[in-house]
Amino acid sequence: MKRISLIALLAALVSCSTNADRPAPPASVAPDADAVRAAVQHTFDGLAAHDSTMLAAVILPDANFQRWGADSTGTWRTVNLSGSAFTSRLGQPGPAYLERTWEADVRVDGDVAVFSAPYDFWVEQTCSHCGYDAITLVRSGAVESDFRGWRIASLTYTVDASGEEACRERFAGMPASPFPAE
Image 1 (spheres, rainbow, N blue to C red):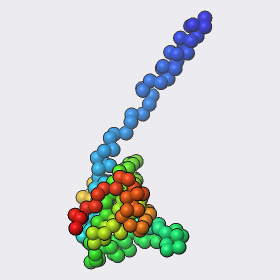
Image 2 (image 1 turned 90 degrees about the horizontal axis):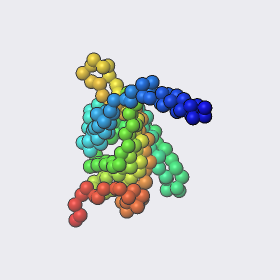
Image 3 (image 1 turned 45 degrees about the vertical axis):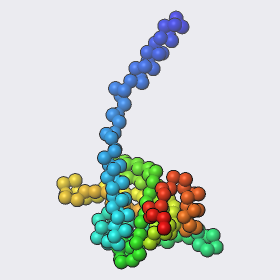
Image 4 (image 1 turned 90 degrees about the vertical axis):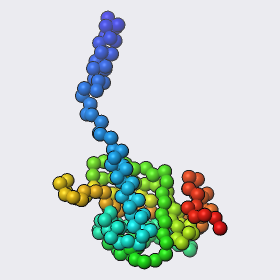
């Protein structure tokens, strides 16, 4: 009798654990993740070109940009900018910029994505600072429109301006300098 009860229990467990009642897993998000990475890279390319039109193509005007870093006393401070202020400020002529990320993690859920990665930021071939980018993007535009793409809704980033060597110590995966040694 115990053996029949055990067999009946196992049969019940097996029938409950079949995939028939489970929803299908979501379709691959790889194309979406690649498009998210491309939108972030487009932003970096716009920074490098000081091109406000390129920046505005991927940054929502009411996006929230938040910079966190320590001041000279070691106190953490934040600077907040709207997407339009960021685009206007950094889309003007100025020094050469280069921002790079590595080991990026991209999560996509429908029309919302999060891109997070360590980064370094170079100004005129000098490592200005490094930190961590946390970027939220939304897929905007009507499905039937010519433009339906990923746009930045918020970007929060930390700033460590203590120099290239400190950045290398902080982020072991930081790529080599993009500029040839003199």
